[in-house]
Amino acid sequence: MPELIWIIGATEGIGEALARAWSARGARLILSARSTQKLDQLVSELGAQHIALPLDVGDRSTIVAAVDQISKIGPLDRVVHLAALYDPGKVLEIDAEKAAQIVSVNLTGSFHIAQLAQPLLKDGGQLALCGSVAGYIGLPQGQIYSASKAGVINLAQTLRSELSGVVDVRLINPGFVDTRLTQRNDFTMPAMVTPQSAANAIIAGLQSRRFEIHFPRRLTYSLKLISILPYWASLPLLRRLTR
Image 1 (cartoon, rainbow, N blue to C red):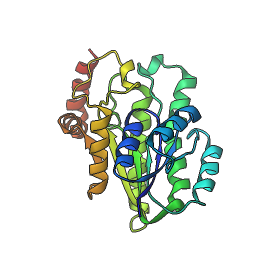
Image 2: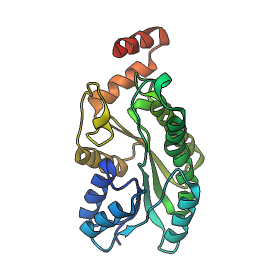
Image 3: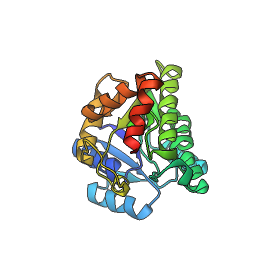
């Protein structure tokens, strides 16, 4: 039997690359995002065995409706939640309404998916949430996005403990990936990778026993090191990045 995998945030960037990679490996996919048109186009390219299921992770009612439909299809092997909003800039400059929307989609949306999708998984099935290396430590111009991803990291850690022995919870922390979102940045992004490379790293990581899948490691290990330094050492480093 092919794996049945639900990808949320499937129409662009890492999500689309994952859909294409898993489809090529023979998995059956349920693909979700806000854009019905893009979902239908992707399914038409990948094959009729896949299912397009639009939703908005910022709107719990749409997730409830999607879960109801999936419950009639069968138990899932994996749920991979990638949907997120991003708006680069400094904290004091971001629009308050936009900031609230980012938190709603990135953090509260991850909570909705974790809570509602978990019963759809088979015993020992996999629930993967997408944080970011931006969540390791408060980075310049990370604004509310970094804070929301720090929350996702914390949420995944909590779920890993609470669901131990029931669901295999995983955390995905990408570095800079060449997508429509990162193309909005006006600063140098070290160790940039393609969505295809990111998808391959995620698939390999989810097949391993590691809780956290993070890449590229030449970037992630540097940020991990900064994050564990005492503030008297780490904050001056971050100020240099600001300048």
